[in-house]
Length: 183
Ligand SMILES: [Fe+2]
Image (tube, rainbow, N blue to C red):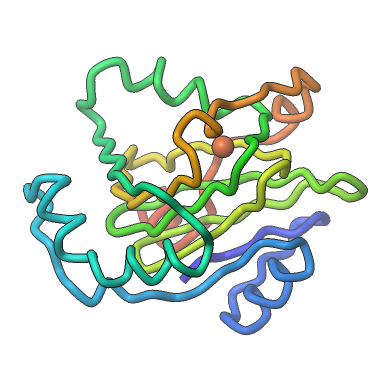
């Protein structure tokens, strides 16, 4: 279940409240328990095949053209360089849609007329951050995420950096149970 850290430091942990808070900021959130358990070692093709029905449903709902898999582990080559592309405030010309299959991660959202809040996503979370939303993304300490991504147009997904420096004021620290457990 996704958790939301709101300005002031409180954490929303109730699914209905998380969904409502995010909807108020234009972000769609659904809990989609992975209904087709896929082995960690399974290929991207196997994962996309297992979720073909769900992907098709999402494509029709949101006008998405393609889907792929992002699969990041602590030993992924050039991991820091890859993560640095997402951890600075940016926006895209199209929606950022992610269905988390494994692992977790941390979105910071910077509303146009509001304060930054954080969403920690984990396996089973489907999230749609609308085009134009200023945001950045970090992994948690376990440096693990496997997610299906949907695109309206692959070229539209290029990050546009704001260079606002706002991201520097926030620690990329996850706040869910796994983080607490690992200290
Ligand atoms: Fe992004």
